[in-house]
Length: 124
Image (cartoon, rainbow, N blue to C red; front, top):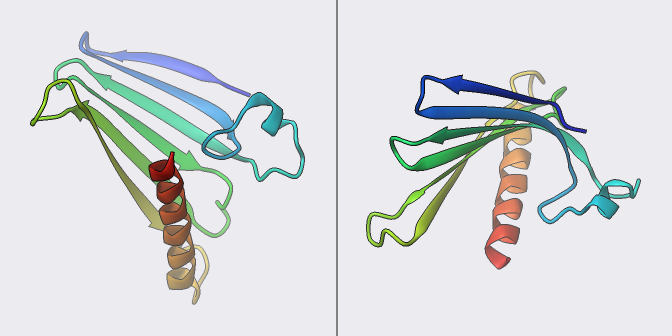
């Protein structure tokens, strides 16, 4: 399920957004049809900058919107040490002001999920 919009910003940057069904890091088409796999909707935006030779991916998870909002950002750019390398910097913003009294516990849960996801990425 994908809805795309492409909006040129000036003549040097391109932004693209999509609504995707996310079923984990290495999801395949067969995983998406399995009802037991934990799949959530996510809004993914990609911004390409030709000036900085970089691209940024923003992902907003729509699975926990009633209790928290999660926005992830991954910036890919050329390494300053070696121009043949690509550096990926990943960060996340977790907000849970919707549930009074439990916001800190929900933020810790979201942070732990983010750390697990990062650990899976590092393992390959």
